[in-house]
Length: 266
Image (tube, rainbow, N blue to C red; front, side, top):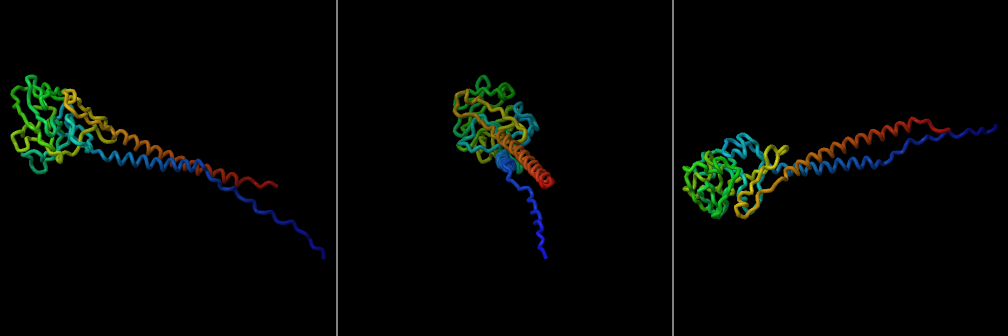
């Protein structure tokens, strides 16, 4: 009997090889970087707080009900001219739970603040200060407004509203213990913006005290803008990375399916 030789069966055709996609890695890295940048921006932005300002004591600078952005600044002292959020319990006649108010610092610890010159200007350490942000003729337009002269204790600030003839502030309590000054511990922060953290514009800072010859630079803080840009930029990178990853994976899967559908060469 003759042995018949049969041809060997064809070997299984290997499927398309899975190849590493550099583009997929790039898209994943873009999403990861976006998480880091956006998270950092969000975290730093949360260092700012907003509050709605009641009453008209800070007009025309801040209108009643307007939202301001504030942040506690670790400064050696609060600059003259800064607008701060303070606890009303700092005043001797405050009732429990009275809340907070926004006022302007017109004197810091050690200052001698006097009202008023013949031009109705306050003087700080003997230097007249022109305050363009105030109402009522630079703040003290009515000659009958009671004068005061006060030495601001260390560790405190002397505050006033911009609407000087309709503001409850340090000037009312100059005859009380502490001379009406507000301890730094009673300040919640410095106003740096107008609006919510996601839409605020920089708050107009004054140079009136520097122009009067007093030392101390005005507050300069637009960090919330940078934080906002980082947060939104990070979110954009996350979206780009996720979409890019999905598109890359789908395209790679499609290529493998098309390659698998091609019949083997004979």
